[in-house]
Image 1 (tube, rainbow, N blue to C red):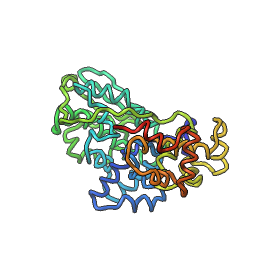
Image 2 (image 1 turned 90 degrees about the horizontal axis):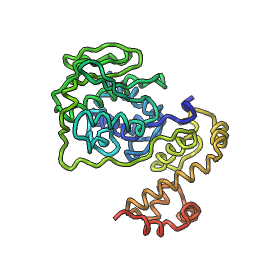
Image 3 (image 1 turned 180 degrees about the vertical axis):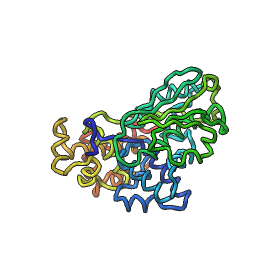
Image 4 (image 1 turned 45 degrees about the vertical axis):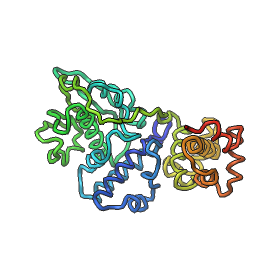
Length: 333
């Protein structure tokens, strides 16, 4: 079952976008891969939307197999801007030193996914950046471990530059393959662990000032993954809206349960599946209305309504005003 601990594990769509960019750089089609896996093309979502962790696992595993790269997760992290919206690096825009940046990321990492937590640990002359916790899925974890490991290194390199390489790394044995051949880890001493991934950062490096390019983005304020089933399902439904009207058959595969169970499960939290769809539509619509100049009719179609009048009536039930009036009151200037 995909739902764990009463919720659906989620990750930001930014990681799906990085996977797609790495695939395209290697001459492969991310859309074709999504179709082959029979999952939505999550890389077309807004970077800050939430997508199912299980689908990212499958994408990572198949992308690694398709490209013949056992360290595809590193390729996915290395591509693109580290400070792009929706990325972990974006949260560090106000940090002055490497140490401050790492503390920000450790504090805010729960906003980027509902599994695998990060922490800092002191040992001798080093601070260890740690990612641990039991793996929730059978496949994809080595690739996601590589992605996290490369993230740690890129965070440190915000102060040291691209030449810095960690002297010591702890890594689950299942994720060891291919790392010694990576330029990022030339001369690195690897120690196998069961579930822990960690990088040693000397205390002197922790004090280095951040080298940020001019115009670095401010950290965005965004919601964290929901801590209950109904909320996490609502977040995934919102991400689906940009591609097609969510059907319960989409959601049952994401949640890993039968349609009947999916209809019953939200009721335990006092809501119906159809209500969750409407709430997801409303949340997404308000974002588009306030943050873009998209026509009302286009917003309606994007939300999965075949008749814009139905969208207007549904929106008014939630907001108490029409979509047009909502835009007048809340549009960003």
